[in-house]
Length: 225
View 1 (cartoon, rainbow, N blue to C red):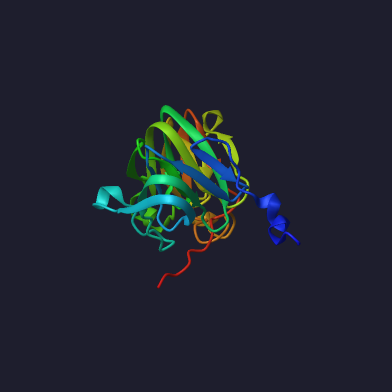
View 2 (cartoon, rainbow, N blue to C red):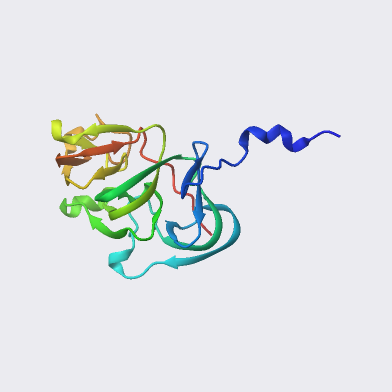
């Protein structure tokens, strides 16, 4: 008797015993037991066991508002006992650990984080022009625990402390806590630099730390309903 399932053996679930385990380059497995995690709403692709989901919206200070992309990021608290599998449009998954420190993540690139990590929404300075930037609203994470990010393509890590650094607001996916951001408008550069709609707006980074840049302005947001 042939084993049809054997044809997919190379895709077998990866077991490490860790709380966050990448499943290949595009998915994440979260082991749920006594703790819960915050995850991107709609990112669940499968789960095994007794897993419960609770939407976390709240007031203006606890939700990413619609930006130029039209996307409204909502978080869900995932608890219970079992294994939760998360992904977002087959984007690359990256897992890192915060050790009593902080970082900021573009809302479009957050996938999951330990729920004991404190989080809030921050606004990039830049006046009315900032409303045109997809990266205007971001999530700041503080504390100790695991964080999972996504990127559209392989990212590059730039050292901000070496020189002032500028990026397309939607290409900058995360930066360390010692970095300060501002929004710069350069109308003369509108047709010369950048990937698309945000080329005249640049997100500036100064201070001590790093910024992670993806080679893309991100995936198009799929219409719902």
